[in-house]
Length: 99
Figure 1 (cartoon, rainbow, N blue to C red):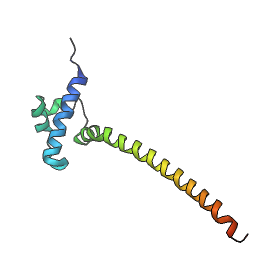
Figure 2 (figure 1 turned 60 degrees about the vertical axis):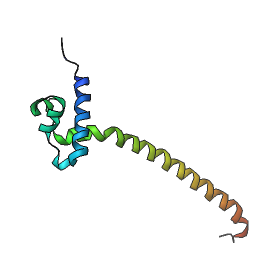
Figure 3 (figure 1 turned 60 degrees about the horizontal axis):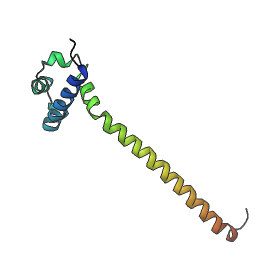
Figure 4 (figure 1 turned 90 degrees about the horizontal axis):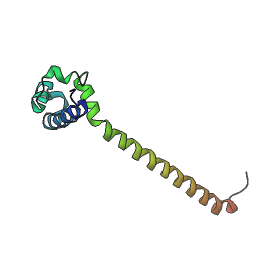
């Protein structure tokens, strides 16, 4: 029966999170990540091409959430500025000389 790679992937991600949290990116070790989840470093490379790819997979959900949050708040802010500018123009236009 084939092993569930998604379960292994989640275990690796949790181990990687612990490793990166404890040692930072530069000092994190694929060997230690493997030890944390009961795999060899070579087995990790079947899931991720590199330490960088593993880190990207780890932070990608947070980055995606931040981008969505920023996009929604920037759009709301831009709309508020347009609305305020329109209101200011409506109030001030009668007092400004025609150009």
